[in-house]
Length: 375
Ligand SMILES: Nc1nc2c(ncn2[C@@H]2O[C@H](COP(=O)(O)OP(=O)(O)OP(=O)(O)O)[C@@H](O)[C@H]2O)c(=O)[nH]1
Ligand SMILES: [Mg+2]
Image (cartoon, rainbow, N blue to C red; front, top):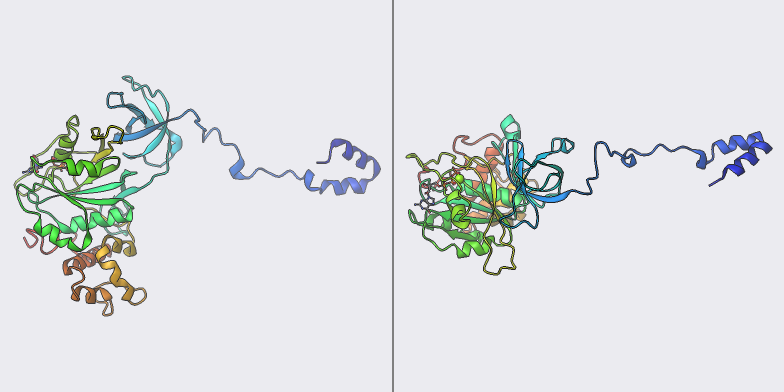
């Protein structure tokens, strides 16, 4: 740095030198870059924010629990700070909270930060990216470790196409799938399990009086989200897992469709495991969905939901679309050689077709071979 004293001396001695001094880099006033400009007004630091975990969202109110809260600690109700912009806050989000986090009646906190998400489970209203519905993307839940795909074995009948879609969503979001087959008292699991033989897909069977120890062990220490059609028994299962949950349970109508008894996603703390030091984990009950739109998943990523087919594609020509009319697609030979179930290939191709706007939009997840598939 040149001090003022130096400058005085130069000015006194030589005009040219003074001029040259004007161009010295020490004299250049660099405008602070955009990123380094303090933005305290629009982006407060909120160093005092406390961590919260979002367990429910209802009309702009977010129910959060603090990290060390026990089951008896009151929950904190919060709203989103305006500075979050359009960023949505969903169940499973880990957030920063300021304001009144006492949980006292009427107290309201503010969510000022959303932590980076470990995983994001999304679905779209339909499969076609070019329609408004296809672009309408919903984040179902953030930070889930496990996707529990709940399918009843009867009433309503299982739909392997729906399960296949959930598998695509799970693998795409880096969430481990678990197949949960409910109402095993009404029908056997053989048909569904047979369809997934090559997949090594973990599964549990649930009947009204079944022991849930195996499922509890799979849920311990993780955030698991239940997805499935309406009426398959998600809330019934949550009530059995968490006796204090008191989730509303519906009736399944004569045509085998539930009535969407649950209307929003809610995370519930699982009871402590036998090892009290262990983290019991969380289970998220979600409202039944009619379909699981996959417009947000690229055609290439769809294949990740079909690990039983992936290996075959190394023999496909470059940029193979894997469609049935592609004569050189190696998937046909793979299935013909008995290395995968032809119904799985058909299901994959139905998904490919559905993404490009073909296929039957009314029954996108019903595969031939499913019970009632032809009706
Ligand atoms: N027979 C039999 N019925 C069951 C079983 N599990 C649930 N149910 C019945 O299925 C119906 C629907 O159960 P819910 O738990 O409300 O289903 P849900 O998946 O939460 O439905 P939505 O909230 O609408 O998505 C209820 O009448 C339950 O009693 C089961 O294992 N066996
Ligand atoms: Mg429910």
